[in-house]
Each structure stands twice: as structure tokens, then as C-alpha cells.
Amino acid sequence: MKNKIQAILFDMDNLMIDSEDLHFQAYQKVLAGFDISFTPDDYARYHGRADRDVCKDLAYHYPEKFSPESLLEKKNQIFRTEFITKVVVKDGLRELLEKLTRDRYLMAVASGSQAQEIEHILAHANLRKYFSTIVSVDFVKQGKPAPDIFLLAAERLHTAPQHCLVIEDALSGLEAAKKAGMYCFVIPSSRKPEEFAGATQILSNLSNVYDALQTLQSM
Image (tube, rainbow, N blue to C red; front, top):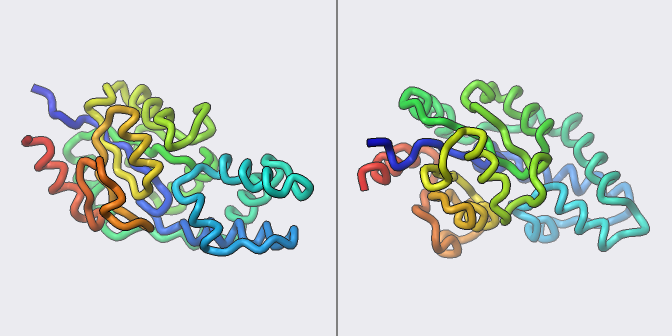
């Protein structure tokens, strides 16, 4: 009998790595060049959203300043040149990935970031070796909270959605996982845990994931 869970799909930003504040700083810097103030509260509205969607919304509010494409290009350039080396891997991640690899789980990164950015970060952090595939917003029509990213990741891993476990930190990711028909562990990064109703389980950190997975498999 096969395990209930056969594949693990990881979000990246603020789940595997501490990067959300770095992304905010990159946006803040590029927008300052257009004399636009961008505060933490402004950025909080976009938590869990793909850069593509963030830039589209900002361009809608400032159409005379930039296009979505030009803003995204400028933001990505600043992030890669000034902030990517400051990315820090979350506590417990490497140990978790080693255990999952030992147990022969299939693993993918399923993130709203762009593919090139994901590859740069994983390479810098020496994490790429753990993942069979990477699915980014570049490969789908809609980012989270649409289920497209997770469904494509499952397809690439040749695993049915009902045998996939998503690990997320954002509400949009939980919504996407539920729409995809997948299990979802949430480790909240910015909202209160009670706001994640519908998660398979709410955990406090990555070090708790493996034991929670073992419990889920036995149910």
C-alpha cells in the first residue's frame, strides 16, 4: 500500500528562506527612484503574491511611471545584485530535506517567484540538489491563490494531487493548495495562526514538519 503522501511541494520565500524583507527593500529602492513611498504596510498587502502580480497592481496605480514589465525587470535586477547574497536559510530546513530525501519522498519547489530567481537562490544556499523540479509563476497562467503552480508541480512529479503535501507560510498558498485538492501544512509568517482555517495542520516551525508528516501518514 502506497503512502498517503508521496510528494512534498515547498513554497520558497519566507518558508524555506528569510527573504520577504529583502524583497520589500528591493521594491522600496526601485520605487524610491520614481519618488514613490513604499512602506511595510504597503508591501504587506501583497504577501504571498507573485512578483508579476505585484508589479501589475503597482503599474495600475502608477501608469505614468512604469509598465509592469519594466518595474519587474528593475526590481529583479536590484534583488539579484544587492540582496540575493543576504538570503538566510530557515532553521530546520536542511535537516528536514535530508530526512525527506532519505525516505525517498519526491520534492519540488512551487513558488510565485520567477524561475531564474529561484534557481539563483537555491544555488546560493546549496539547496537545489534536494528538488526534482522547480515550478515558478513563469510556467503557469495564474499565480497563487490559483492552484496552477501546485498542479503543475504534481504533474511534473507524476503524482496525483491527493498524494501531495504542500508546505506554505501564506494564506494565498493555503488557498491554492486547497483548490488543488492537496494536503497543506502551514507555518505562518505574518498572519495569526487562527486565520489559516482549513489547513491540514498549523505548525510553528520547519523542525515540526517531519513528525507531523509521520502522524498524517498513519491516519
